[in-house]
Picture 1 (cartoon, rainbow, N blue to C red):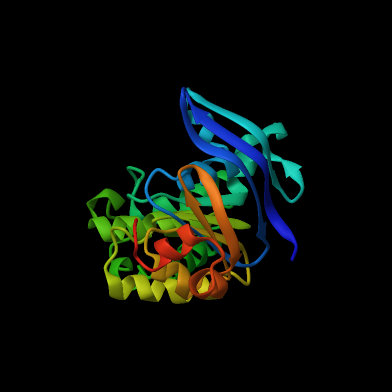
Picture 2: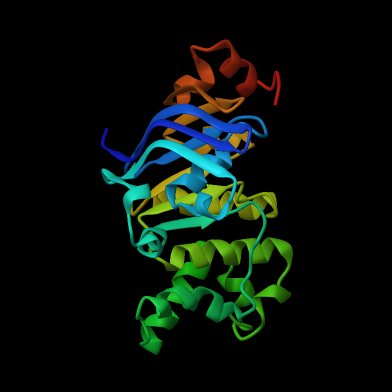
Length: 250
């Protein structure tokens, strides 16, 4: 099992509040890696460390090492280059005040892709992967912020995929999306793991059970248990883990 992302003794605090406490974890390449746990257990903070959006939190203090492909992300000078390699989708849509087309084409253009035919093909591909193409193909010049909440969230996913990332971080991506569409996106994610590593933070434990190859359970800022998903859900070693995945608390 080759680690694509590795956390070594990572401790994160926001002022006096500890968000992650001495976490060591390896995330394999080309898998869906599930991260589950109750609210305020450190799951989102973990994702923010990978592409250094944690830098935007003034009170955040990070200790330990987070590495991607063996390189410590906090020693990387070209942070923008790092973020182009890592797609990020947060729980609620963050749309750019641009057309649907330009939302998806924005990052590729910034990376130097200006050929219209190639852009058209990439925009369509990403919108199809986000299960949005059929709903917006006749209104690509409409403002993305005019779409419904669920459509805007899928547009955010398409925009993240437009980077052609090697790592895709999903933080409660389906919170604003209806169950039928969520299932369709889940099918796409199962295909996408052949192209990239997917890190899935979810409060829907059955979503992790359906999708993830490995799953980590966090509670109270600590990594409690990590292992093959089927083992976590059927033969967890820790009593806390067993209680969480069976709905005993959350």
